[in-house]
Length: 161
Image 1 (cartoon, rainbow, N blue to C red):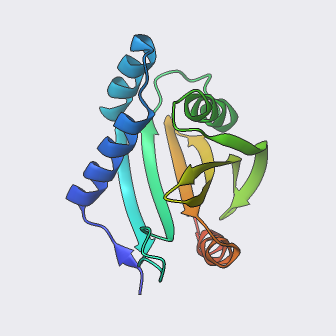
Image 2 (tube, rainbow, N blue to C red):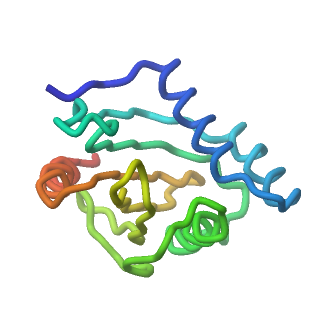
C-alpha cells in the first residue's frame, strides 16, 4: 500500500524541504544550495494519509551526498544536519542526541527530533554513514508508534553488499 515516489516528486520534496529550512543566515543558505548540487535522493516512499487527512502519516527517504572533505564521518554529518534543523525557524526540538545504530551491518549515526505540524507532532529520525566519499542517509518521518514500528521494520530489512 505504500507509495514509491518518482524522480520529479523526489526533487520537489527535496526542494520544498530545503526552502523550509532556510532562514536569514546567508552563508547557511548558500551551503544548502551548494549541497543540492551533490545530493541525490535514491528513493522516497510514503504510507497513504491516515483517517485524520493531515497529510502523509509515515515517510522513509534515502539519499546520498558527495563528501569532498575526507575528515567528515557519519557522526559529523549527523551533527551538521542536527544543527541545521535545530537552527531553523521550523520549531524543531531534540528528542535524542547523536547515537549509533546498525542498519544492514553498517554503523550509522542518528538523532531524533520533532516539531509541531498540522495540529499534531511530526517526529523524525535521521541516520547517516560516510563510505567511499559519500554520505548515505535515511530519514524517517512519523506521527504514531505504529508508524515508527513499521518504519523500523523497513530499516531492519536493509542489506548492504
